[in-house]
Amino acid sequence: MVRWLLPALLVLAPAMAWGQDAPKPDNPPKDDWPCVQVLQPELSIGAMWPGDDPTATGPSWRDDAVVAALVERVAPRRVPVDEATAEIRRFAAGYEGDRKTALSTLFAGLFETVNGERATIIRGIRRYNARQAALAQRMEDTTQALDGVDSTSTDMAVAQKRQQLETQLSWDQRVFDERERLLPAICDQPFILERRLFALSRTIQEEIGK
Image 1 (cartoon, one colour):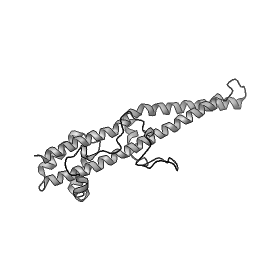
Image 2 (cartoon, helix red, strand yellow):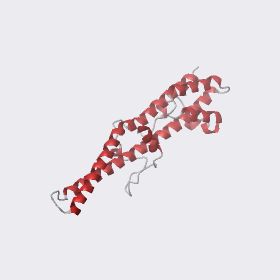
Image 3 (cartoon, helix red, strand yellow):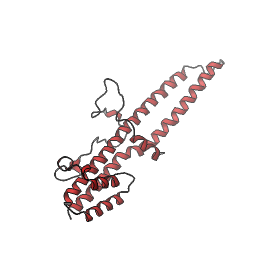
Image 4 (tube, rainbow, N blue to C red):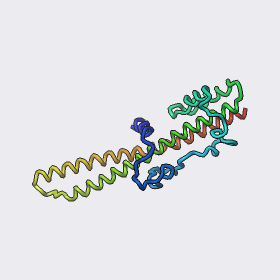
């Protein structure tokens, strides 16, 4: 279930339609984050990379076909970290030319790619939480409607209405509980990506230092 759900999050729209008074996408409300982990909306390149920012000062990683191909191979989460780091080391060992520039450009590509994927997941989590809030409100409304239906009535229309409300409430509760069960695994994804990027950055820096 989690494997099915996470890819779905990645294709969600960038932001919810919060209405005319909604905050700007780069300043979302704090109460829309459902995870216990502290949210860091954007990763800090300075925390992962010493010296100049290669995403700002170096050549574009997309302009180097070899580097761009390597980014595509090692950035995806489906590639185990040990396989990704081994591929980076093979690339560094066999590269002919300015290794420091090439490896710095590689990091720029990985940072942009992973940080972008992470931002997409964060937006998806916020949409996920918004759906939960909407479902919780619907459950509350259904409960109130159910309380207003006479449970002792012998009128068939009243009995049918009560049964429909009970069925809807039961289904909504099941969906809500299942989403809540999945939430911890979903909330882990931005932080898994952060740890992955740290590991790849460390490997690149080690190779530059050789």
